[in-house]
Image (cartoon, rainbow, N blue to C red):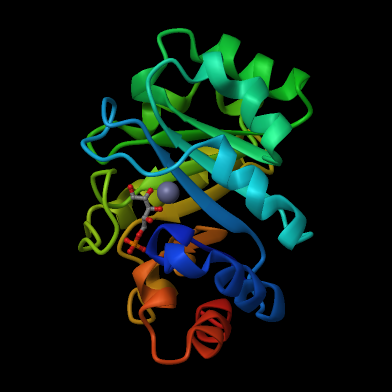
Length: 215
Ligand code: DX5
Ligand code: ZN
């Protein structure tokens, strides 16, 4: 059964408390929190302040996806705000290994996100330091985009890299995940499904989370 991490980016920000309550009562495993700086990606979302406001609302892990340049400058601040997992983009990190060491030393799980154009092979030498690979199945920056089908091949390739090394790194798929494509994503070897619009724009978000869990 995959883990399901609804992305709050698609929630109603005027009623974030309601969104938190909904996820608490649902089968959601993690809260996926998308931080964008308007520089690494062409959109600006929210930062540590909003995350800190949400933290007392739930006991579920906060999976924080940083789509920002120089994420190392903010790692400690996100830890203080309540991040449990901190994911940085490979493309934004010339010293990725150092970033991952920093995240671990702050007591968080390490995540590496890769854009659709980045080959899975680029992860080979950091896989041992990586708890979660966040594989982007859309170009990061916006919710509600179409899943890129080639991602399925990348999942299979990464699955075998992880298995060959005997690691327990989780493969998280982020972008365009729907009830329809979730089963093939899981069959390819992913362990975590991020879903924004599919969950929050559903007529029954709670039931949608249950459906995704059953993929
Ligand atoms: C995109 C974000 C995603 C986004 C997913 O840059 O990283 O987490 O919220 O949204 P959907 O599920 O609507 O594609
Ligand atoms: Zn994300």
